[in-house]
Each structure stands twice: as structure tokens, then as C-alpha cells.
Image (cartoon, rainbow, N blue to C red; front, side, top):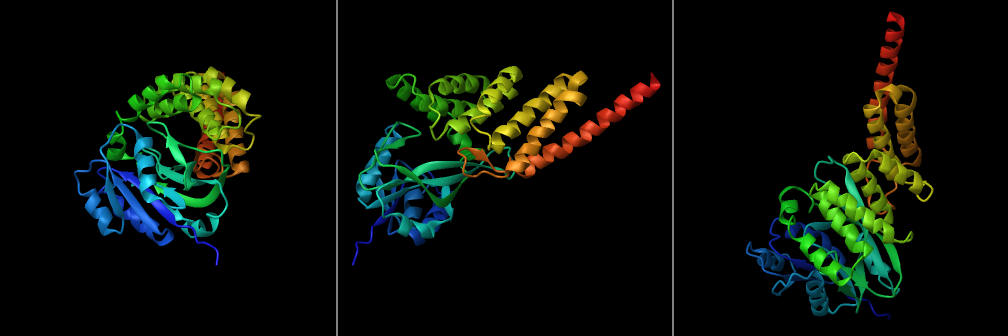
Length: 344
């Protein structure tokens, strides 16, 4: 009888009493064991984790996520490790784990992150979180597994609410110093620059985000998993900081690379609409029709959850909302232009 691989869920936590039960409840049916490494909770998280079936261990925090993750993986000592955070939970696809964990590879699952101020829209990221025995992490924060094994996607979908409200505030001053320390050790690392930019953007420092995204783009290869998200985020930040010309130039340069990205065309529509607002003389005949064409392209493409960093709605309701609003605006401008012609 073939060996059935032992699958462990491996978490590092601190002060996650708010959500640890939700996380463990969603995982329990799909794994053989759950290991929680607590790094200094004062809110009862370890007790709750034990009550919900986890094996709980403790480690003093050393400002190094990889050190904690790797220690937890050593303790788990499983054939396969599903690495999650306490503010995440399995939404669907858990039943695929058992049959997926057979070939030697690293598994990328889809994390759906609710974003502050984005309504019901979610950002979707394909993250490498399913690791065979022996794979370990590198990096103080936004740590990455290091292995020569190939990466493959598994249709395992995970919810995440760590970018909302109080959860986001807790992370405000945590990540950037650790990223800067890693960047000191690995100067010019494009992935670290990308993560620094994301951290600045999510905390509304858009000028700094633009600088870091630009530096990251210079060194990010075309095949990098995160490049699509990097381009779209830079377009958004350039537009929000008034650098519309630079954003349009970047969109033009990247369009051939991502012709099937509703996210790129959605933000392009926003940029062109901004031009319409700032150049009313050309809004009716040029900028608004171009913006509408970009959002129409979004609807033609449809949703693309397979694209790294995609935002739910760019290929559906968000584009449709913008398109309807622009059509109304176009009709009003046409009526005003006709009235002005008649009066003249």
C-alpha cells in the first residue's frame, strides 16, 4: 500500500485571538496535524489554538519571519507543509490537498485579500505556501521559500483580512525596517523594492511607493510572478500622484506584454478619465471616448483571477460602473456643447 503523505498546517502567530479559531476550523478537515508557533502573545492565542486542536510551541521573536517559519517547519517535520497566517482561512479547495501532495513541487495557492476602502473588491495573489519536506525560507519579512523545485498552482483559495482596520494599523511600522535591513544585505533586489513599494502604498505614502516601484521595475524580469501586479500598482500610484503622462507612457510600453489584463486596462481607463477632467477642451472628442474604450476592453476580457495581483471587479462590475458613469458624462458634455453652439 503506497505511503500516505503526512500534511501539516504550520502557522506562526502573535496576538491573534480575534481570528485563530476561524483559521484552524477551516484547516482541520484537510490536514493531519496543525502546528502553531507563538512568538509572544498576551491575548490568550496559544490557549485558543490548543483548544481548537493545534500543537502549540513557543519561540521568542527575533525580528525575522524566516527564522520563525523555519523553526516551525522543523517542529512540524511533515511530508508536506501548508503555511498559513492566522488572519487567513481556507475558502475552497482544501479537498485537493491530499491528491496534490504527491509530485515533488512547490504549491501556489490563491489568497483573496480584502482591501481597506475597496468595498467588496478583493486583491488576488498566487503565493507559494505548500511546501514539501525540507524546503525552508529566506528573508526577514515577505519571506520566500528557497528551492530548485518547480512551482505549480493548486486551486486552493484562501481568504485574508489582514489589510483591514486595526489589523493594518498593527503592521504599520513593522515591515519597512525589516525590508530595509534585507535590502542592505541584498542591494538592488527587485522583489524587496517591490515589497517596500507595496508597504508604502498601503500606508498612503504614494510618492515613496512610486520611487520604489520604478526601481523594482528596472530589475524585475518579464517572467517574474509579481511583475504584472508591479506594473498595475505603479500605474495606479503614478496616476494618484499627478504623474499622468508618465503613467500613460508606462501603460503604452506594457500593453503588448499584458493584452489580456483587465487590471491594466481598468487603470488605463482611470488615467484617461483623469486627463478628461484636466483637459475639458479635449474631453468630449478624445479623452472620454478613449477611457470608455479601455473599460469596454475590460468587459471584453472578463475576470482574470489567474493574473497575479488582480483585483476582483476590474473585468466586471467595477469597469461597468465606470463605463456607465462615463457615458452619462459624455451625454451631458455633448448636450452642453450643442447648447453652446445654438446660443452662439
